[in-house]
Length: 454
Ligand code: PHE
Image 1 (cartoon, protein in one colour):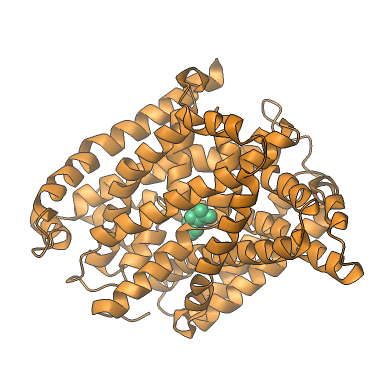
Image 2 (cartoon, helix red, strand yellow; image 1 turned 90 degrees about the horizontal axis):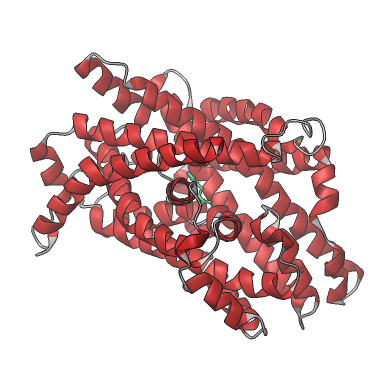
């Protein structure tokens, strides 16, 4: 994508950043993480971390890319040679995390595709939505080849789109469907909130009972904030590199963080009343969204239609996020090896990721004995990657950002002379980048290590 100015670049930014942020993280991952960490107190902590730690890092990553006009590998390499220390390893760590995340993200996107196909098949067999109730996760989890096939289809579509480049406006098209998705979520939300369980749910979600937090909750909140805002992957550095240095990105970053947080909150409000009225067993399980929603829709008038549109929109959102992940890897490869054509680099990345996909796809069969504290491979992968390595990569971004940019450069990129609050926001942001973000990350990781051995 070429560097653009004024409103066009601003529009592109929202489409890219919101498209990459809003995905499975909000609708699939957030609800069961909230269930796992006991509800209200965790939500409070999550929102606080998103708007402090998350927003600070989001701005820092965007500014890094914008300043250097390059992605994380090149940026970290430059800092490493300037400082004569191996900071480029942080760049590689980010890239590895992005590749493994895309592999396991493709498997979950494959689950969404499976449900979409099931809803379609139900639509062709009968117009009665009760058939939807038979769709379940159990059979899919045992069918690893099907998971692998669906993940491959998803990945293939992502590669084809990235090969064609951003200019085709695929993101534009998909992101412009987000309002439709939002409308659908609101309709379902009204239906869900009219269930008898709602008072219990509102108490669970918004009454902060701090005794329900565990040692690991802070780390889980930080990990999820990074995952959902696409931080630590280098994605925001790549997006930042598409913008001219006279553009001020902090205000836009703030809006993206707010939109993403609101969508996550809507997702829990949608899922929990339904989960509370059925069995609460799935509350802490990655299958939560997939078990709960179809059951609910099967009892609703036009449930099949809602299900079909919902899973279609969810899959498009997942596709958009996957494109963001793959674009990050491709952009890094192209910058590292300018002799490689963009299309070739996207195909190479796609094949490498397909290979990694085998592990999460076969976690229910071939690797079913790989267990840690009773959790299967997919959960262990998710936990290590998102709660452990991702925050470390985030810490790397902070270090690189503090070393790479001088005070003058940072101020120039941050401060918008037309905005009266910009100067004071700058000092808050800098304080947060230097002290709050690193302390929160280190504390989050340390508490998780303690909880592991307890
Ligand atoms: N933020 C996305 C989600 O919440 C995942 C993602 C991470 C997408 C990194 C792009 C880059 O689903």
